[in-house]
Structures are given as C-alpha cells and as structure tokens.
Length: 376
Image 1 (cartoon, rainbow, N blue to C red):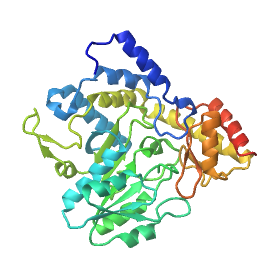
Image 2 (image 1 turned 60 degrees about the vertical axis):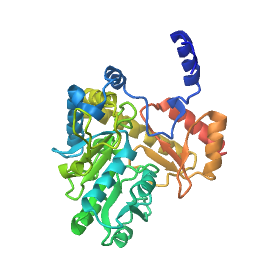
Image 3 (image 1 turned 90 degrees about the horizontal axis):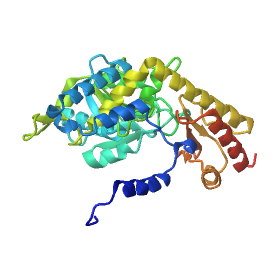
Image 4 (image 1 turned 30 degrees about the horizontal axis):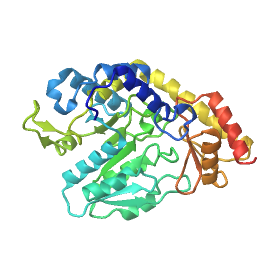
C-alpha cells in the first residue's frame, strides 16, 4: 500500500483501464452468467453494507431474504421451504450434502451423482469426506437410472439430480430419482443452479422440483438466468430439520446461531434478487426465456444449414455442436474473431450458452465465423 492517498480521479482512471481488459459479454457464448438487470444493481448498491452473517443487526434485510425464499419456493412448487441466499451453486451443493451427512450420521457415507454433475461435487468429496459415486449417462446425456440404482448400498445417504446440466443443459429423470429416493428412504438434492430460472418457463416442462415427494433440497442461482447480481444463489430445503443440522453456535453476535457456510453474508445480493424477481415476475422471466430459446433455435437451424448437427436437441438454452476437431475450432474462434466458447468433456463438442446478453445480430455473426473456421 502507498504511504499517501491517491485521488479518486486517479483510482478510477486506473480501474477504467483495468476493466477494459475484461471480456465483454457480447461475444461470450460460454458463460451461464450475464449482465445483471439494472434494478438488481440499484438495489444491490442500496444494501451494500448489510451483513446477514449477523442478521439481528439488519432485520429489514433479513425480512427481504425470507421473502426471496418464499418467492423461490413458489417457483419450485414448495410453499413452505426453508433455506437462505448462498453465494451460488457450489455453496448450495456443499450445504445440501453436509445436511444429509449430519442428519444420517453413518460411517463411510456415499452419495450418488450423475457423471454430468458439476465439479463442485469433487470439492465436496474432499471437504466432507463423503464418497461421491458417479452414475453413467444415457445416449441423451441424462443419468442412466440402472447405473444409479446399481451404486446404491447401505451406506448411501442421498442422490443428486441435475436440472440443467452445465455442459448440455439436460435434465435428469428427477421423477424416477424421486421414486428411488422414497423407496430407499434417502435424500434427493436437485442441482438446478442454471435450470431453476429456465425450466418453469419452458413449454411443457418436466417435473423436477418439490412437487415430487422425494425431492428434499434444491439449489437455484439467481445470478444466472435470474439476472441478479453476483454472487447470488439459493438453497431450499423441504424440511426445517435440514437447517437445524447446519447450525453453528455464535456466542458474540446478535443472533445465537448461523446456518450458512460463510460467516459474513452480503445483504446486497439479497436485495438485488428481491428487486429483480419482484420487478420481472413470472411474465418477465417467461419473455426472457422465450427470447433465449429463440436464439437457441436460431443457432441450431443456422448450424444445420452449414452441415453441423447438435449432439442432442436442446432442452434449454444450451447447445452442444458436433464440430470436427472442437478444440481447434474453439481456439480459432477465440483468436481470430474474439468469440468465447467452451468444450464439453465427453464427447468433445462445441458448447454454447444462449444468454440474455446475446442478440440475433450476435448469432448471425457467430454462425458466419463458425462456417469460416470449419471451412464449410
């Protein structure tokens, strides 16, 4: 740190230069985050000093969090859910499995997840000493239920289903997983970090939430398709006992227990999430999802015109294109045209996420450059 203070003008001149080196979203087709809605940003800044780690000091902000939980619960068909606003899907997944482990209290516990699950579950295995068993996928990149069933034993404490997988935007057969969880008397956590603000607004969405008896917890991220500020996640439990098994005694705060993973928690992201959910409502989110699905259809149709097929018909606004030498195509798209795309693990394919920051003009340009790079 410098001895003497630097002027605000100098600081922001430097920050402007620094920000200019960041990638702008206009050519980003790899991210599941986007520009936050302007009302979320305004609300975030209004509550920037609120710390829900000691929510007794901030009762107004805490009331907003309870309302956010209620709204998320309604979205997930859970009229009386319990939970809190997290930093995102990783924290939600950690806490959901931590609650499973603490409630079951058995030696050598294991949890069954799909091979398509987010890499946060590898962190969980390391942190919580829970064995993570990975079930195979079917030809549509959903979890194979026979594979999942074969991995369940007397030490299995829960299952995980993905509602909007990171690589393919696929939805696991959550209904069948719910039935298996009920049959075995184990927990079922649904990772809907991306899909939670998409699936309810699709035409003829599959069952994936608390409407299914076996679903015990859901993770959902407002900072993705919810258009809130980063970091905004949500962890929802069907039963209050889950939160009770996450509590830690906090003797020197205005409240005597915490149930969150982090100590300090931003009230600003709670306010941002509250504001954007209230402002957009179901109709607003439906319009946004419709627009993203139109762009998704445009990508698939345009790719087919130049001879490129998707690995599967898109379920939501994520597309995996079966291009030859996907890694080279990705490299050339980035280096020659500035497009940020990603690659699926198995099989190797070009992965695109069609977020609200994209336009038809963006997609037309991308398809033109993709055709050039693929020599088609």
